[in-house]
Length: 240
Image 1 (spheres, one colour):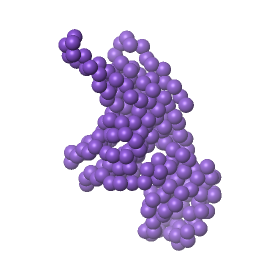
Image 2 (cartoon, helix red, strand yellow; image 1 turned 90 degrees about the horizontal axis):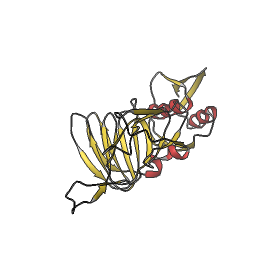
Image 3 (cartoon, helix red, strand yellow; image 1 turned 180 degrees about the vertical axis):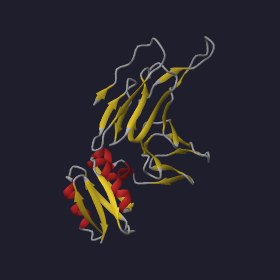
Image 4 (cartoon, helix red, strand yellow; image 1 turned 135 degrees about the vertical axis):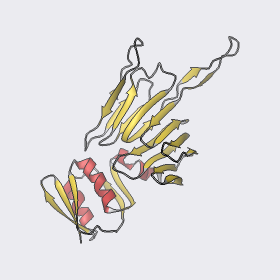
């Protein structure tokens, strides 16, 4: 776990970016006490003076799991009418803005994926679409907000599947071979090439990310749907 040190209060706000490579996950604790787990090929940009700003806003590329610390701030008012409210925590991606009203949630926003997905594990979050079609929704635990070019959707999902990566597992949920291979490419740091007609079969099941890539490919081949040819760090997917 990397603990971020609070920056000096002097001067203008600056931003740091933490990035993970392919095949790497990383845990970071921000100065406000929030914990973020970054999946492979992801980055988190955050203000170095996050404890001093009135709105805690971070930017995410890729995928991350958030456990947001509750931080209170004084509200404006007269001397006899001073209260407190929760200091906002906002996660911004290319397609969504997630306002944290609770604590634990997962955001998947890889640029090579069609959908941006926010899955609520615990608490409450408000998700707003940043596309041409403006939508927003307050999620309950077990719900997922999807932003895609053609619209915005909220649905019920299996939380364990959505955050399986954080626990060291691939959990494929009715996914095509292109989706499966994008995840494998990011985790094992390999290039993937599709040869010939692409299979329309769907894959379901959980596999440990601790397995080496040869074991992973053999298990996928055992379905009888696809075959793989390996050339260095390039994997060629052949439809059986």
